[in-house]
Image 1 (tube, one colour):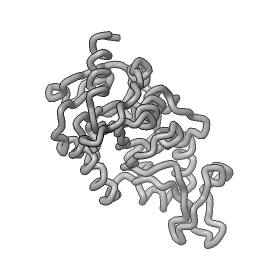
Image 2: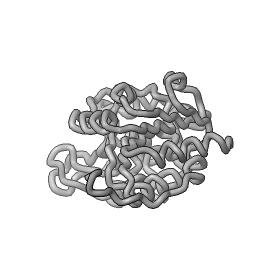
Image 3: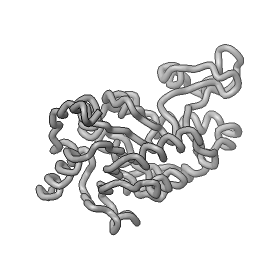
Image 4: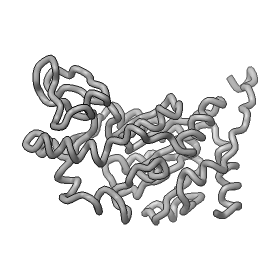
Length: 251
């Protein structure tokens, strides 16, 4: 790994007043989760296209098949945060302004301790699609077939955005505002091919754009720094500096 690029990233983080970390599936691969389009990703291993299996229509018409696919390929109860999740949390806890905008649904940023997390595609939660009774991961995984609501008997669904569904406009607005206010935007572990989430990068007006991704993206030529290394390995080398308290003139 290029020491000079790590040093440059460290300097950008140290100097930034507001950081937004925009992450995709590649952020969690070092926690044992598959990405989508890699050689061992979800698209390569599924018997049918995930873009079909993860639609709301398929969930309704083939609930048992959906359930088996989802719990096998998209739910990882034993997964734990890797150095990327942990270091971002450490930076926030040190007093740095760090916000997470993630396309992932694994909840690992929250598990690591990050407080400001916008989950664009949903999270690791479950509820009845009819009466909205919440259910735990343990309840969801304890069934051989698709789980049913204890209160009304309807299907219990994961709190994710299915293919073809609209993203939550409130979350999109919150993410856009955070990115607009940031002076450092770190885009990591994403191909920037999934829209409308990827369109959020257009709101950035800050000092520096950093891209950390093993493959090329169509934003590489506009970035101040591009690192083609695993995200966790990169952040493992970042140091958390104590934050200087604001003076009265800065408050």
